[in-house]
Image (cartoon, rainbow, N blue to C red; front, side, top):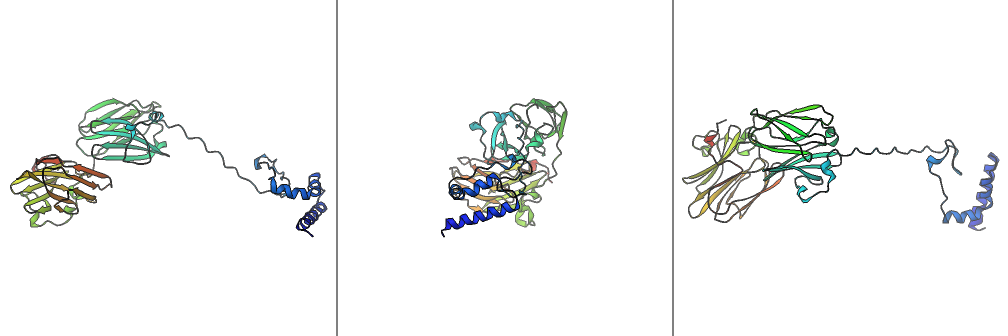
Amino acid sequence: MSILEEVERSLVAAAERRAWRRHPSPRLALAVAGVAAALVAVVLIAPARRAPHELAAGTPAAGADAHPRPSFTPPPTPPRAPLPFSVFHRPARPRDRQHLLKGLDTRRIASTPSADVFLGVHADKLCLIVRHRSNGSSGCGPIDAYRDGTRLIASYSDDDGPSTFALAAPDGVRSVRLTLADGSVGSYPIRTNGFARDVPTRVVLVEWRAPDGTSQRMAFAHAPAFRAQDFYAAFQRPATPADALDGLPDARLIAEAGDARAWLVPRLGAVCLVVRVGAAQGSGCRQRVADVHTPLVVGVPVAGSRRVVAAAFARQSSGISLTPAATTRTSDALLTLTGAGAQLLRYRNPARERGSDTFPAGAGAFTLHARPEPPTAIAAQ
C-alpha cells in the first residue's frame, strides 16, 4: 500500500467516526470524496480564512473546535495631541543646531548677547537648552506638563549677580512680567515660543496669562549660601605654613614651580586665584562661587617676554591637558611658564561637559572666567 493510499484510508475512517457522532454535512462529504485532490491543494494553496472578528459570535469556523479559543484585539492607540509649540511647525535650520543634548529635534527660540536658547523635543520629553559662549545648561520635563500654559519651563540663576534668564511657553502665552531681586519690574513679549534676557540680578518672580485666560505666577527662591570649600578640593585638607598668603585666612597653595606659586582664596560667596612670581602678582575672583563650568585662569608677565599662567579647577574636573604641556600639574591645578605663543587648555568640568580655552598670544597679563581684582576687594567669609 502506498503512503497516499494509507493517508486516504485514515482520513475516510476519521470522517466516518465524525458522521457517527453528528449528521454529516455537504461540506464534509465533499471533503471526503475529494480527499486525494485536497492533499495536493493544501500543499499549493493555503485555504482562505476569515479574521476572528468576522465570525459570528459562538459560531466555530469550518474544521475548527466546537469551543474556539477567545481572541483579543488590542484597542487602537489614541492619537497624540498636536505639540502646542508652533516653532516646530517650520523646518529646522542650521542655527537650530546645538551640541549639549543629543538626539533632540531642536529649534532656537531666543538669544541674548551672551547666550542662545533652544527648545528640544524627544518622545514625550520637552527640553530647554541655554548655550553660553563658554558653557551651557539644560533641563527637561514631560511635554504634557507644559501643554496648557499653566506651567513654563525656565532656566534661571538663584545666585545674586548678573545672569541669563530664559523660558519656553506654548502657543497662546503672549508676554511675561519679571520682577528682579532689586525690585525692578518689566514686561516682555514672547516670540517663537521663547524669551531670554540678560539680567543684572536674579529673577524672583515671573507672571503671565495662560491661553485659557487665567493668571499664573512662578517664584524663585534665593540660593543657599555656597562656599568655596563646597567645590574645591584644596580646602578639604588642613592648612600648612606654606599656605599663608598676606594674612588672607584659609588660603591654600595649589601649585608651585621655582619662584612661581598659585593660591586659592575663599571669600564671601566667591573664590579667588592668586598667582605670584617673585615680586610680580596677578589675581582674579569669581563672585558666583557655585559656577564651576570653567576653571579660573590667571596669567602674570615675567622678564624675557614670558609669563606664568595658573589654572584652578573645581572638584571632579577631569581630562585636563595643555598644549604645549604644563610645567607643573596637580589634580585640580596647573602652572606653566609660557612664551609669546598661544596655548590650548582642554578639560571636562564636573558635569562631564567638554571645554577648552586658548590663552591669548603675547606675554601680557590676563584672566579668564574671573574678574581681575584682588581678594581684598570682596568681604571675607
